Image 1 (cartoon, one colour):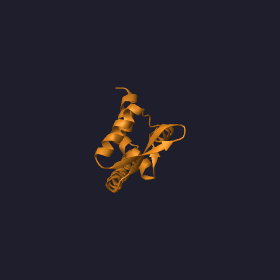
Image 2: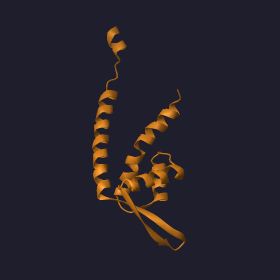
Image 3: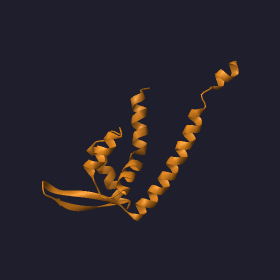
Image 4: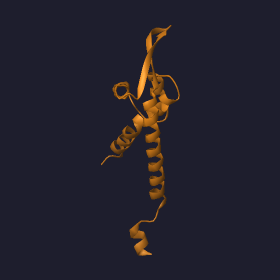
Length: 118
């Protein structure tokens, strides 16, 4: 089993949550989302981001508007909807529960095998 595969799956699992977090702060352009995700070491490409944004929009969690650009074609800026904020709140609760649970489990350093030998 390769560690990279597990790491990729873990990152994919939280991608939607991270994207909604970014959008919840205000209007955001897709390339800015990619930059922030990449700088946070959540590697994602346009081919992954755009279909996810489309799914989020179809689910009513995000919306977008076109804004004219002086340096090229119009840009699509994303915003979170009220339903998206509610959804994000529930994801945030789940994230906090998972963080608490994993910290509790990972804080226990001694395995059953080591305890049996003591």
